[in-house]
Image (cartoon, rainbow, N blue to C red; front, side, top):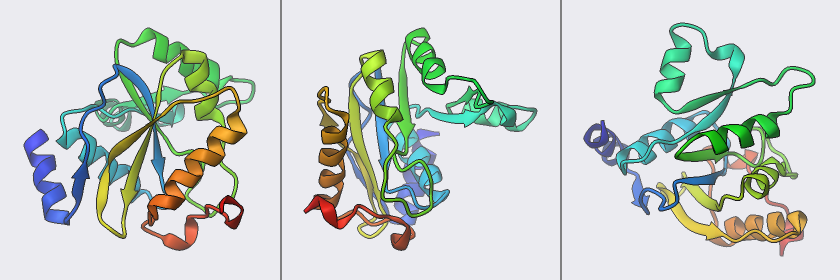
Length: 186
């Protein structure tokens, strides 16, 4: 599968930045998230470098044969019903596993949004795992995980710093009009 996915990246014209992450457990922020194709190209990338990416998927989608395919691709079922604590479920799953490279889109949606969700921050702090910044830059056709972030105890400052990193890098989403970093970052 690794050779096939390398071929696909080459065929689609993508340049790879980085390799499999060194830590057995971490969160990987996928930015900008403007299309379902972000998942596809990210999965191809991480598989091509020899990794197994993990994503969170509502447990209602884990029925035959879709559930089998989702698990094969590294998806983790999460109960999002009323009253279920997603963060507690995710932290428990991280602690249960030997390895997990959990991809999370901090925007929380593919639609334009100026606010990022802080769930990744809470999960990383509670599970005591590092956060890496990944890019799928459709403008430059670059994909990879080039940067590790050291979180502080100030979530808002950390999110501002992470957003600034992406702004300074000048990443472009598949649908650029859906990716908002905000002018307040200058």
